[in-house]
Length: 371
Ligand code: BGC
Image (cartoon, rainbow, N blue to C red; front, side):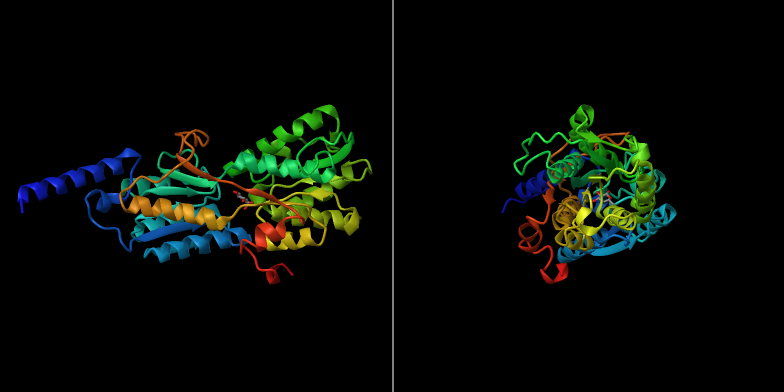
């Protein structure tokens, strides 16, 4: 056997590997680039909070799928506290992680801790929420967030009878009184949801088919810091006092936790279960799906976090092998320093009419969990 020939092939493969690793950004750390192994490497997974079911499911999915591929996982939740998240990520870096998966609390507060990751060639994947003002974010996986906002507004219009099930205008003239809520201003996703929703509602607001009794139609007025249900409940209680006594017919809510707070305020404000306005949501959390089945909340947006987890894990695995992760969007997510290559997933409107098909038949929930 010709030794030189074999050596030539080996050299060529190493060259191909290193080129792949350099093709995107920092990838796979030193070990992968030098042809070493990241098998069984430790991966840091930083999640924002356990106050919402979706993030618990996200953390569990990512952890178990990484473990199935043989990685060790350091999964931490930060209780929605920014300094806690920063120090958790610092500890992960000091503890020798080879890659970071981060769902940030405030997308702009991680710049300096991520500089530490960069100096150690640790790739960073932004999970669901973009990390802003940092060039250290290598990849991003999320849903099409503007489309989520379009879906929320579309379901509001359908619930009000302005659109039919096929999305066609019914000619309903209203006027329908609605109030609008937005997510946390420090979460990059919140403006995408809001912009998608407002672009969809604007023609109806302009023509007077929709009215906002409070007049609060700016993002800043509608935003709920840290997505807190109690803050949404308080704001809804306040809004009920400024509406001139008219009954509300709809509330745009961008997240199920807020919807629960909003519905509580409406119920204590005198709305009985069968006169509740059309209230939207997001995440298909168990409490809200039950509320939808009971005829209280009208809709939610289902984002299959099993798929999001799978995407993040596929990205980590590619990076650990010195390969370039697959992306399907290289334009949308500019974090202020660079456009972060992203993989976007699709979401779906869920109401009482399709929850069985979307959530039960796909195994996301069992029928029993929704009782
Ligand atoms: C997520 C939503 C979630 C919200 C509140 C957003 O960043 O994309 O799915 O409803 O945070 O947790």
